[in-house]
Image (cartoon, rainbow, N blue to C red; front, side):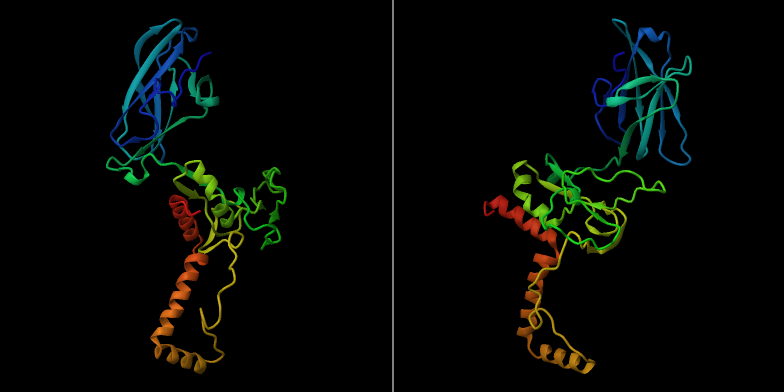
Length: 298
């Protein structure tokens, strides 16, 4: 049986992709004659606790050999996610989302298609138009610093980078996402020339902050970059970047000395600014490397 509907195909759905609030969506069905008489309806429901399905009767557009064509226009005014399928209405059959996004006939509930509706006044920033974004799952991208120690005993380090990730549930049926392939920010930096050759304009990173899982969406501390991705290097020196003291009186005396020497304050501030930009802000390294690629310095 041919594909009855495919939201990726402009014949079946226009416009392609997400739509602006208040914009009309045109949907078309191709129903084989072998299904007999049908009276198809679009069934669409907005995601939400109190939202209910809405039925739109589709109009008959004509025939081609052994196929009947139906269409409907629907205008979605509220921002949000909408899910839809088609009800043939003459019996209990429906058309649901099947393999490869193609519509298939089913006697039961099945997968639905989705429409995303965004704010009517939203405009894509000009700097993003026509650009290539590349999403990186840091742990699975590239390991720049090898053989990092695992900070928790239940974390498992995958030395074989071609091994299959641990996806099986544990004894309680949970998925702990506890295996690590060691990808880090240094690895991303090493791959910048490769990304540049592919024509990548922007990088979109999965979370890099401190968390227990390898995907890091269960972030524990948004102010700390995950230790597995970042190790504080050397070069942070006593006297140059900081002062030490063993008593309140000694601390007060060192502050007095600094306040009496503005040049020393500026020098320490500059040392720390340089260190912070290069090490405590690893994304600055990425930006700097991208600038060097653009100017041919790297």
